[in-house]
Amino acid sequence: MKKLNVTTYLAIRDIPVEELFPLLEFLSDTSSAVIFMNLDSEDAFGLMTMLPQKRRDRIVQCLIDLEGAEERLLQQVLVKVEKEIATVLSTRHDTVDIKERLVELICRLKSSHRVAVLDVIKEKKKAFYNKLIKKIDEYKEKNRIYFFEDILSFRDEELRDNIQKKVDIRGIAIALKGANEVITNKIMKNLSIRVQEMVTDDLQYLESVTREQIDEAQSEIMMALVKKKK
Image (tube, rainbow, N blue to C red):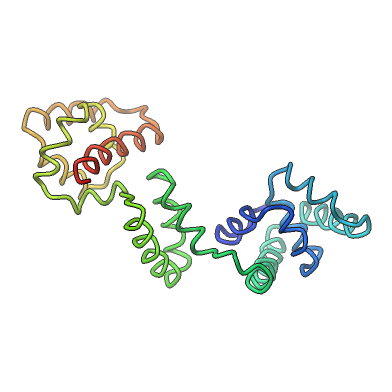
């Protein structure tokens, strides 16, 4: 079963089971079934045991039907379900701020995951994306959070004074393995000629580097810059 869209999914997963239970009263059996399929197994079991037997049986039957549904029909169901859940959340659980929850999640994601999530939102919901970016910038400023992409806002002298002094050659190379051309050029031009050559050599042999290693190396560079900035 495909999960709900990311904003609705985050809202559902963030509501305690005891608060989610009364919301089911205002949802159809189908929407309730989809919610169960988007919960952790322990939470789903706990919530299911709270329901009257007849309602539980109807939801279980919906779960069976959804699992066997064709993809096209499933997508149609999900569209209706997400609208119903969003309506109930906005009128019955006003403490849920989906956009705020999404901003917090994105700001805590590793670089590769964050970029992937933002790319999907930008492609499918451009207007929402633009509003989301503003919220993200506010959250970053309030919590003093820096993304790897923010390296472009640092002065050249800050990069020269910190990166090659605090990050080893291999770490710089790994970080650049996952960087775009603009960021790569920004970093490389602020390294000494000797270090540039060493980084370039290392890049040629980084075939099996993982996404996690790249994220860690990029975080190390930002930590070196941010500590100085603070």
